[in-house]
Every structure is written in structure tokens, then in C-alpha cells.
Length: 170
Image (cartoon, rainbow, N blue to C red; front, side, top):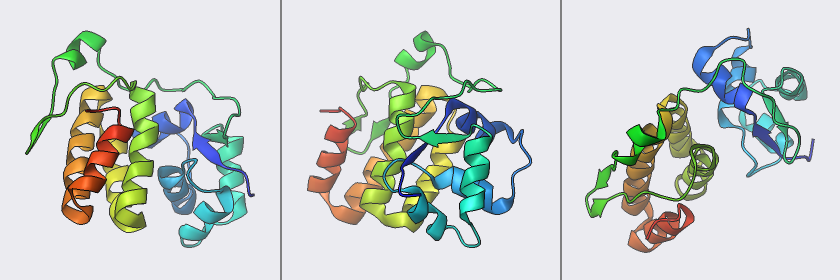
């Protein structure tokens, strides 16, 4: 279980639609898992989780080995049309969150890692939940704005600038 896992498109859709009858521990594991740590680390962070829960997620196509096949979603993710997202520019206290060159899926994958890296597991988990609830690219941009503000509050302007660069923002 030293392998790193990532959510598949099916896993992202599952978080929104709750199609599979997952146990509480398996669902919690699905919510937090990302490639920043190996599977054993994620399992140890969810109280009551076991390797069987991770295997359940793999067998259902909700997570895959990093670099492994991505399973098509059984319920398509809600993502607005590109023209609808181009005018949505969330703002922060220091100005607009400029449009990043990151796609929806890139932003979706990067935000949880930034949240956990800069805010820790507990505060980061709050942002993971917000990311999962976000509706399309515009929603993720709003979460990114809030995350950058929280990083600046918790870690200072220099760390927030570093996080902005990671999001490919000036």
C-alpha cells in the first residue's frame, strides 16, 4: 500500500451524487485521498479505515493508482460551459483572482494538496469539503480565493504568494 492514489472522474462524481453504497470510513477516505501521500498514510488518517476500504474504492473505480487508468464517470461532473466561467473572476482583498491557465481537473487536484500542505490536515479537510461541493470552474475559483486568504492569514503573505504561483497566478 505504499502506492499513491488519485480520485478518478467516477470518484469525483460519486462524491457529488452518492451512487455507491459506501461505508462511512470508505466515503471519508474517498473525500481526502490525493497523490500527496501513499495509501497507507491516508488509511491511517481515517479512524476505523482499513486496507479493505481502500481496496473497495479501487475495485469500484473511484480511485486509481497514480498514473493508472482513469475511469469515466457514471454521473458527469457539473461543470459550466467555458463561456459561463470566463466572466467569473472571484476577488480577494488584494484584487481579483485572475484567470489561471489551470483546467477544472488540474485545479481540482491541486487545491486539496495546497490546503493540506499549508493549513494542515484538519483545516485542509474543511477546504477539501468545499472543493467537493464547488460547482464547476467558477466554484473552484471561489474556493481558491478563500484558500489563498486563509493561507495568508495563517502563514503570511510570502507563503500565500507561493501558493498563488502554484495556482499559476501572478
